[in-house]
Length: 282
Length: 318
Image 1 (cartoon, chains in turn green, orange):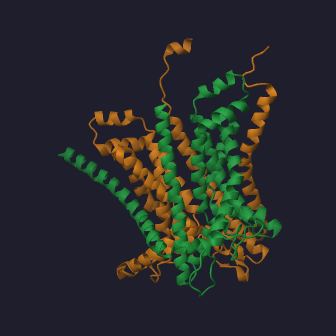
Image 2 (image 1 turned 60 degrees about the horizontal axis):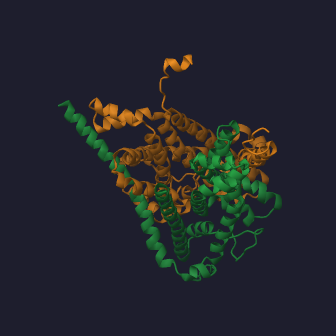
Image 3 (image 1 turned 180 degrees about the vertical axis):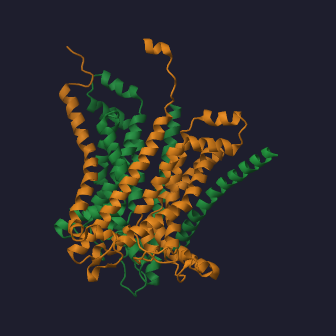
């Protein structure tokens, strides 16, 4: 009799775990459903080619914000990719040292710092001294968020490269720098690129660190020393506005953002699957 | 001629110092964030001291800065989100790592990761136009008997603590569940097999694994908590942005991150700006502590993973 109760309890809990998965997937489905249905009716070619129209005039697009997002994210990448990769090399080459674990801890810490706090920090170092919001400040803020992501991916992937590869290079008389940069790093590069792609996608969706660094700009601008419009900040501005037509534009912007994220995740997944197949094949 | 495995000594030193300089930059950035936030909030720290965190009135126009409602809003919304998300996140972790057929695992992992990848601003937009109207209906439909409880007082506005907690819990589920999943994966299979061999049911074997992984799981939940504390955009858009301390789930409230997002560019004078930066500083310190503790839990779990095999006596003698 007691066994019946135990078995029943087991079944109930197994069922509840399955239910938990469904409960989490419902909001995902709802968010995607609304973004796609609301966004698709508002998304058109003019969204990418036209400038925002003043209040009251219907239509227009977010050409300036699309370009602005690309610029700010590129600046962030430019800044974070070298730092992330080289510090990742250090963490994997000197994995056992105390400095390496301190750096790893710093990376995890930085990863946990709220993005809005990074915005406040960058405001202090890159906006306040010049009395000027700028695309560059936005890029720095996004870059700081990207560094720990790229560093940890690089480190993990370098550690996966078989030690015999590096030993072979060293045996041929290569210096450690040469062995790492010409043998080990290229072997891990496809994976690192995937990691960078995912980091860029994640960073492209950030709003909070841009609010008071890149700020916003109603006009088309490619000046890195000037404030610049970005998709995310524009979606925020439109979403909290009282105008129907702006809400429509916000949904279109959200669809573009989600599209970027989903496309990058799928791409990364396909790339990883292919790499795994290749590795098994060789 | 001595054999030099890494080229000449200076090559090795150069490489180590060169890559090390980049690596140290990470530590420098973290330290610089702390120092800069402190420097930029000195005015407010000097002016108000601890009073800043014990006063309830936030009226920048009148020069009154009391930040207690923001601490309250941040902690209340994050704890509520944790209460909602923890059972769901654990259920997902258990389902994916222990129960799901292998073929289902990958797609499920992908979907939960997608939940984490959707930008905060998109959740916020969805929150404003879909979740908030839904919550408003829910609040309006609450029976009067419940409405007299302190948890459910106030008019049904939709925007407020309930919406914020719901959206936060959706957003932190993937973080807690993916870490908990990793932790469960590190539980040795022998633990479960041992439980089954003793006649355990499926749940009893899972409970064994959960018990074995308890430190890591607490770490996973705390990591989600850290995320919730700092989450900005989605919360700002649905919480109603009203600095008040109340238990009511229906009442609009405010969080530390949200006040930064809303008021930072409007700060007209230095004292106002410094008061806001001080809020940022405290948010930074709180998330730092929460994250450090959760990493410690997760790392100690990872260390356990190495099999501890009793060394034969012979090895010692040699």
